[in-house]
Amino acid sequence: MDPDWNDSQPIYRQIRDRVVAMILDGLLKEGDPVPSVRQVAAESRVNPLTVMKAYQQLDDDRLVEKRRGLGMFVAAGARELLLRAERERFLNDQWPAIRATIQRLGLEAEDLLAHGRER
Image 1 (tube, helix red, strand yellow):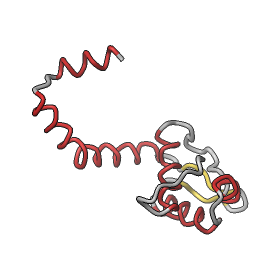
Image 2 (cartoon, rainbow, N blue to C red; image 1 turned 60 degrees about the vertical axis):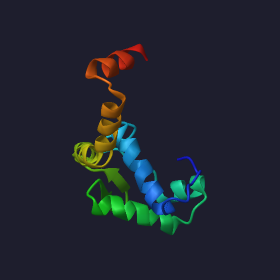
Image 3 (cartoon, one colour; image 1 turned 45 degrees about the vertical axis):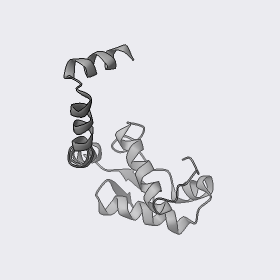
Image 4 (spheres, rainbow, N blue to C red; image 1 turned 135 degrees about the vertical axis):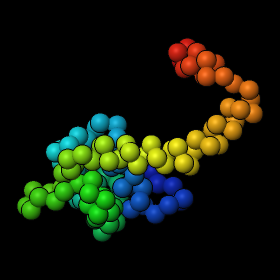
């Protein structure tokens, strides 16, 4: 995990979000072990309690499961759960502003699709 932190949110939240991104990007799949608290703390140069707080949030959200004596693992269905939540968040929080910009600029769906193919 990249140890560059921003000041916009607590570090434990940023750690949680990085694990979420790894699940969404397919870097961590169902049943895969999540990097250990000690490993993340050492690599990120943060207190292990900070990492534990991030992991507790992941557990509370049912994205990971604890296996006694083995560590934490990505829970079954975690990616689908995240995708649903992220899609909903995008459609509610980001899409209205994007749609307004598209309308303001007079762009059509064909313009957007053609531009996407060019890249």
